[in-house]
Image (cartoon, rainbow, N blue to C red; front, side, top):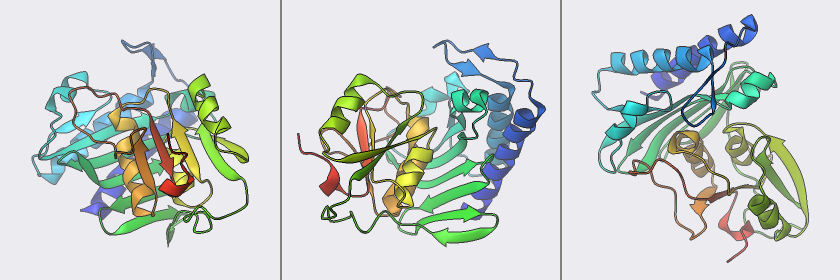
Amino acid sequence: MLPRVVELARRAGEQVMAVYEEGRLELQSKADSSPLTRADIASHQCLVQGLADFGLGCPVVSEEDAVSVSECCDQGHFWLLDPLDGTKEFIARNGEFTVNVALIEAGRPVLGVVVAPALGQVYWAAKGLGAFRSVSGVVDRIHVSRALADGSAAAPLRVVVSKSHLDEDTQAFIGNLGRTTLLQAGSSLKFCLVAQGLADVYPRLAPTCEWDTAAAQLILEEAGGVVIDLEGKSLRYGKQEVLNPSFIGACSRDVIPRA
């Protein structure tokens, strides 16, 4: 099933790029005042129809369908979608936006695909099968930074943060890491930078929702990293509240300061 999901996410990315290249965004605002574009809707429709064609009968939960959130459940399977993660990056036309597709089983992601259509990059993972990245048709298995996996490297930690949501709590957390080099990226690409060994830590103390993180969490975990809340627990999905707790994505627990 994984190749079919990858291909579907690619097609949704093509829908996003059609709007991106056209240049007419026709912005709307959602109930929470976050922006909505025709690309969000086109990607959503592509993904929902494509998943229905799989014939699996799993509920589909999407950021762009508020009613579907009631289908979340901490048991069983459901699809979790962010048809356009990084809408602000899309509007800013910096290319750092993604299409995120995850399959959730008993509260945990077991399959995840992240497509960055403007960058020509595709990431995917399945539970127990590793994490992979494709660029221009060339596929590589990806891993977190091995030099830092045991916390022993002397080089500064490479910390990746949001371009749009760098708050005071996150800045304070970074201040406790010692010597650091700061990187910025949009959307779920921050997880992917850690997963492929280009960054070491991704702290996120500002709000996120379940659809923002599920697919990329699995990619980072299958690349050898961790995604944990401030109590050291892995993020769970299908909660009654779709907001995630604050969390840290990292190449290893060893690089995360203990509370």
